[in-house]
Length: 305
Image (cartoon, rainbow, N blue to C red; front, side, top):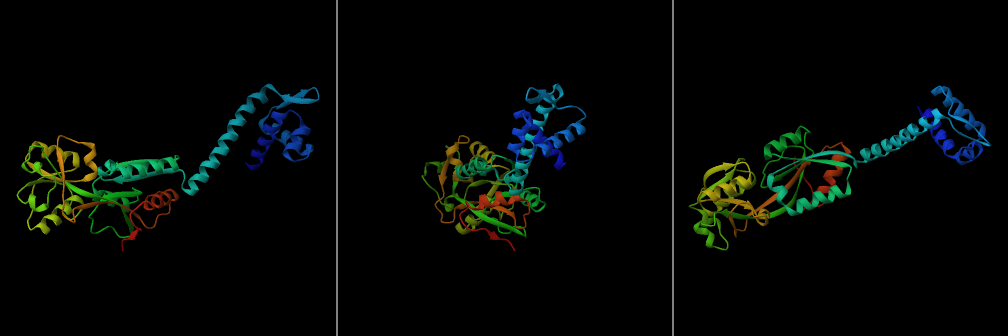
């Protein structure tokens, strides 16, 4: 195969110059060696590639047709080598990122995605919105390259690394007609008698975990009337019913639903976006992805024993 490729390169050079001596000089080989290679190629393909033309040569009718196909073949060969090199260094391939829904409403995260896409245009990015437990299951099974969850998340799978990407203040979402809407800010103590819309996640994880923790610190057990799968669903319920829901502040500028948002002034009223990935990654594309994303984090990657 290597001999054939070299002969094809000699052939295209000769076809462009139409002179054995000049082509041999350009290739850095003896004219006799070039002639031998062209004869061998003609024997291989089964037809004459060139015909005499004055003091030089020119492509035969069959040679002209073959020449165009060879040019395309060599271009594809060069492209294949370049793509393989990119794949070897992680600069080409496909990555799957799972995420909580509110990640795609985080301006910092969207800017990071855009930056990654700009620097590595040959890497295809697949984004999948999933519940946090399912994200981590797929991560362990190597179906996902990077999981983006929302803290707190007290126990991550063995063999993972994680880092906090960003932190957002928690806000209270409610109907504009809610009695508490007249306040500029609220504390958890103000919400003691309210009905909550929470999320379909364990009460030690994510915003549900924050709700339980903050309520406990304020001295009460929250009255959770509804559980939903996504923030936009919670906003629909608080607008329709006299209920409240905790949401990250990064969704406020999007004005989703006819609701108002009031910041929580409790010291621990924060939630974080956390990147999680497997420690023993062997795929170059995975390594490039996680190195890139973790370099933008708020701290160094933390191992999960």
